[in-house]
Structures are given as structure tokens and as C-alpha cells.
Image 1 (cartoon, helix red, strand yellow):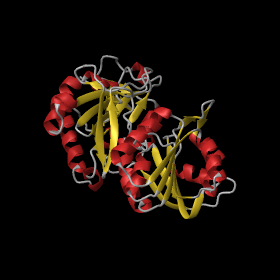
Image 2 (cartoon, rainbow, N blue to C red; image 1 turned 30 degrees about the horizontal axis):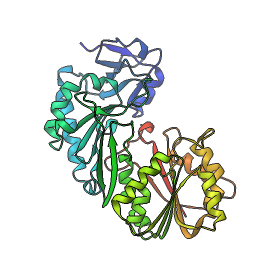
Image 3 (cartoon, rainbow, N blue to C red; image 1 turned 30 degrees about the vertical axis):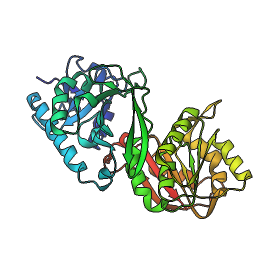
Length: 392
């Protein structure tokens, strides 16, 4: 028998608005620890929905699984299988999905598989556990993954726990626990990108940005001079050169990632000229202005909390300091693409904040965000963490 548990009034309100999470509070703290599922109830003891129970997660204690009444726990794995099939069927029809082998086959709540991700990098697959309860069900889950995703081979199957459980982000490991580090190439729409597994929690590229880059192709094609800020290992720099840029400047504070970018450039043998600047972005902007540069396209994708080597600064604060210099570095008819990676600021508030900065001369041309294999849905703002705005 699945236990029935009262929910906090705020949780009830949010779930009725479409939000799929129950966070840790005085009510969810009383969920029976041994229960794999709980039925959340409102103040009238009416069932709201079945929750996957995650007693070890620091923040999210329950994730909505079903609103079927009554619900039978014996149906769970049948429902898992149906949702895996559906997730696959949607993706194989996507144009951008076919153009690359860095992609998401499962994207958690958006695929009704809350807290579960399946990432492909070339012929490697990473099962990500954002909900820790899936980790405990992996032996039952693995046969279904192998059955419905025939591209997966057991020797290339990795697992990764990515959650707010207090242990920090972990590097992926082979599913059988074998200690291994692999370096290989990923193909993204005609570009080769070096990926690494088993070394750190990140891989050298962000697959959730792949569809965004695909959507940006018309605007980036034949832009002659491009500036890529917070470049990481250079996916946007590589794309610009692939699409005809004659000169690209990449800026990042990390020598490790800029070295990785140089490896990527070597793999691709682009004709255009590339320059790396290892320094804080604000310093790079001043330098480029002093040198008299202007760019046809500027891409800025700061982390939600970036470091200049001395202190940590939020992305919005960084934009406040840089907005004037960014505008000065834009060539006539150039554009600026500003990204923000956090669910705590809505796209509307992000745009309004930048539009209202002193001296702003730019107007919004286009908005970009998660799409295709990384869908979002109304009511779940945590899932809509990436927002991008094209300014002209």
C-alpha cells in the first residue's frame, strides 16, 4: 500500500499550477523514509498525485510521477517503459537531433521521467541521476534502457549523480564501477569537439546548448569577426569558424579550457584566424577596445557565478559592468547574444534588466532557449534555466 501524506499548502498550490516538485519542508520531512512512493494529499485529504520519494535528496523530496486515481505500484515499470518509448519517438524526428551525436534522449521532468537524464556523447551514454531514488533502481532500469535504446552498449554506459545532496557534482563513472578516463570526439553539425569522461563532472561541452547553436546558424553564418566571451572549450568559436568567420576571439579565465579549445581547433583545421585571451572578461573588453576592434557578433555566456580570480560575481552583475563596453565593441549591423543560466530569473526579467541598464542602445531581435531534445513546460521554472537574447 502506497502511504498517503499531507502536503504543505504551498506545495499543493504549485502542483496545481503544474509544478512537479515537493521540496523539503515540515510536511515532506514526515514522509515514511522506507516508502518508494507517496500519494500527496491536500487539506481535505484528497489525492493530488503520486510522488517518487527521494528521502536522501537535500532539496527535492518528491517528484510527481502520476495523477492517475487510483494508482497501482505494480504499474510503475510498465509506465517507465512507455515513457522511454515516447521520449525516443519524439527525438528521432527532430532535425537538429539528427545533425549531431551530442544529445539528450531523456530530459527528466519534460519527458515525465522526473530526475532522470540520458545523454549521448558519440557512442557513449551517460545516465544522470538528479533524483537519487533512480540510483537505487538502476538494476531494474538498465535492461529497459538497453532494450529501447539499441545504440547503447554496456561497455560504453556511464552513470553520474548530479544533485543537490551535499556531495557536490561528481565525475561520471562506468556503470559497473570500473575506473576509467576516456577522451574521444563528438560530432556536432560538421564540427569535431573533444570530450572527456571520468575526469571531472563536465565533459568539455554542454549538450543542452547544441540545439541552441543549431537555431543560431542563420544569424552566425558569414559573420566575419566574432567575439566569444566565457568561451569554455569553444563550441561557439568553432561554430563561427565553421560558418565562415575570418577572425574569432575567445576569452576565458581558465587555461585548462583554453588549452582544450586549442585542441579542438587543431582537430578541425579551420581557415579562419583564432585568438585566445586568458583573462577576466572585463579586462579583455578594455584591451579589445584599446586595440580598436569591432565585432559582427558577440556571444556572452557567463556562468551563474563567475570568478575574476579574486571574487565571485553573479552573471547579472557582470552584465551591468560590461554592457557599455559590449555595445562599443559591436560593429554597425552587428549583434550581441546574451545568455543567462539560472532558473531564479525569468526570461522577461532578464530582458527587462538589460534593457533598462544605463546607456543601453540595443533592441531585442530574437530569443533563444532550451528546445528540441531539451524541452521545457509551463509551471516548471527550474527546468527553464537557460535563456538567451539576441540584441541588435
